[in-house]
Amino acid sequence: MRILLTNDDGIHAPGLKVLEEIARQFSDDIWICAPSEEQSGAGHSLTLTRPVRLNTLGERRFAVTGTPTDSVMMALRTVMPDAPDLILSGVNRGANLGDDITYSGTVSAAIEGALAGIRSIAFSQVYAREGMADDVPFSAAREWGPKVLSRLIDAPMAERTLINVNFPALPPEDVKGIRVVRQGFHDYSRGSIVEGRDPRGYRYFWFGLDPIEHTLDHGTDLEAIDDGYVAVTPLQLDLTHYSTIGILAERFGD
Image (cartoon, rainbow, N blue to C red; front, side, top):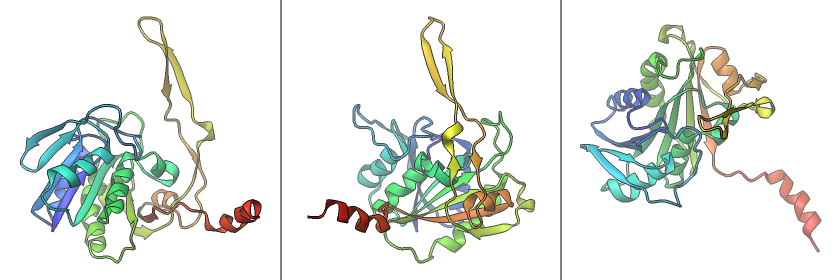
């Protein structure tokens, strides 16, 4: 089985090393193609206004000067001789729960894989304390990742779907198990923008990462993580709101 690994935290991120450890328990045919620098929050963006460069860092290991989506596209169209059987993205440093998935480069890399018709799974490690950006414990992902992946490798999946997996901020022995759940929803209305001035006196703005309000609706990824479980969420790429089609059709009909 040929597996492609990518992420949005960058080619040197510790979470990518954890993902490689997980993947090598299932295959020796591992390819890595990831952004050369951190691309958190890049979503499903493509680099269109400047050239993208591909750097070879080792055997089957490549860095791309672009987004996670760029990295998957480069891997599939330039780097790899044949398409992979599986694409794994992560392990992200931080949660990708609820509406986070719309911003997430980690999930978007898996989306690109799903668009190409390849089984794709995104992995993220939740962490609890502030100020741990460079010292996030990945022990839950390292221990529970293979358990999750073993059940997903050959699970039936519809076309244009992917799987989003989040590991709770707990020691592995305290994780209660695995739940298959739906996407939850955050309240982003209270997010802050921090204003400052650079050394030359020019204003700048920094998007704050304040605690986000959310309701722990039953059966959601947010509830599962809060209860100490690994959250496994199937996602679909069809964003159509079907029940509104008829309503709008009446308004635009003759």
